[in-house]
Image (cartoon, rainbow, N blue to C red):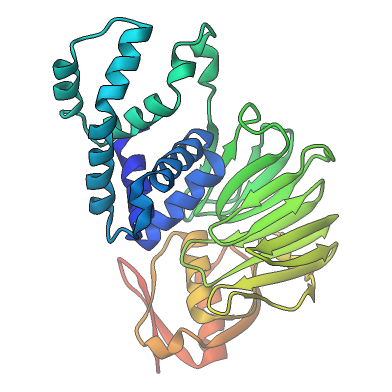
Length: 341
C-alpha cells in the first residue's frame, strides 16, 4: 500500500476528498481488492476504537488519531512479536515505528489485523496475485480494439481507460472500471456476471453487446444495448434495458431518463448527440479528437443539440453545431472556442 493510497483512505475517513480523489477512491474500491481490504480494515479499526465517538474534521485529524491509537498498541505488538519470533527491544521498535511514513502507518494496520496470517506456515508468495490489468486509448486516437482476459472484447474510443479486476481476486464475477466510452461484446457466462463500474453507475450483464459512455466531467452516463439485456443501476435506482434500447443517468437530478429506442449509429464509431447539452457534447468531442473545447459564454453550456456525425471531420461537426445553435467557433493553437455571434 503506497502513501497516495493511504492518503486517499484517510481523506475518505476525514471527509475532505476532492472530486478527483473521490473518483480515484471509487475506482480503487471497485477494482483493487488489496485497497478494498485495507480500507475496510482501517474502517473497522476506526469504528471499534474510541475514535468513532465523533466525526473527524479532516484527514489530518484521522492521521493524528490513528497515530495515537498505534501508540497505545505498540506494547501489545512488541509483546506478541516476541512471543512468536525474537525482535529488537521495545524502545528500539517504537522509535523505528515513529520514523515510518504514511505508507508505513498503513502497513502497520495490516500487520496488526493480519498478524496471525503473517506467521502462519502457508506460502506467502501465493497470496500476492496481480490485482488488475489496465487498458487505455489516449484522447484524439482512433478507436482501439482490445481482448479482455475472459475472452470478451471492447472497442475503446479516444480518452478511454479500463481497469480489469483479475479473476484470481474475484471468484463470482467479472468486473472492470471504465472511464470514457467503449463498446463491449461480452462472452456469455451465467455463473460469472460481467460488471462494468463507472464513477456513478454500474452495468450488469451475462452476455451481450452494449456501449457505455461515461467520460470524466460528463454530466450524464449512457448505456446503449445492441444485443441481450442489462441492468443499469446507481445506488438504489435501476432500469433494465433490452436489445435496441438505451437510457442515461443524469448526475444533476440523480435520475435515469426514460428508456428510448436505440439508433443504429449509437453503437458505432460515429458520433451521435441525442438532445444533449453543448457542455457534454464538448467533452465527448475533446476525447474523440484530442482538442480542447472552451465555451466563451456559460449560458451556452445548457443549449441542447441533436445530430449524427462521422468521426473523421471535426471541422464539419463544428460547422453543423454552429449553424444549429446560431453560434460561432474559432480554432486556436491551444483550443477551440465556441461563442455567441
